[in-house]
Length: 259
View: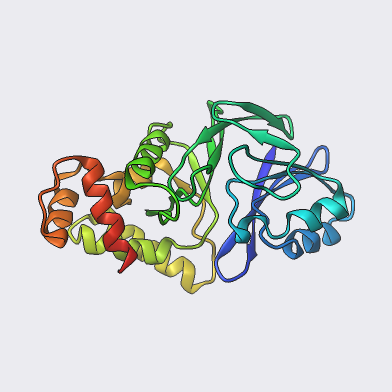
């Protein structure tokens, strides 16, 4: 059975460690810092890091790759359209790879960066997604390279996955994202409940992830750009007529950037 554990890094990053206890093999996802992974391996000396999965090229996601590869000889997977240090396998949209005896589907999700990819495990019982900096719990990534239209299309692609999909993003931004969601939809009872739950989790220094896609549909304003309440809030904030959901999304993203 696969276990997915969060290894905290920097101030708010998570390096996801996929673990196969039968083989004592593990996979690191977006290791911006090698030390948390090396510390885990030192505490589990009979385990081997076999693979490294990268979603995009930002330093807080790739900074530890070369050191880990040198120490463990792990294979490095990453997007074909970005410069990834130590990459062994360049991945394209809709490609399938196999790690720890689990098949992963590669989804191109440009927006945060132009070559950003996500890794999706389409399991009938429990699907899960490594979403990098595209879809966050109650939020989405900033647009450093792509357009609002690209990011919105990427979010729609992820939003079409099964509702029970577990979302493993790479930052602990949930609390601040929910404060924004509350500003957008102050009367959304599910946002209010989730904000209370996550406030208690973070006060206890507990991880708020993974999320579940059904919860994102109910509480993430960036997935709710076609909802009347979200449209109205975005129009009032921007002072413009927003005719399409993608325009609403762009207004929301601009609002969040200065929230």
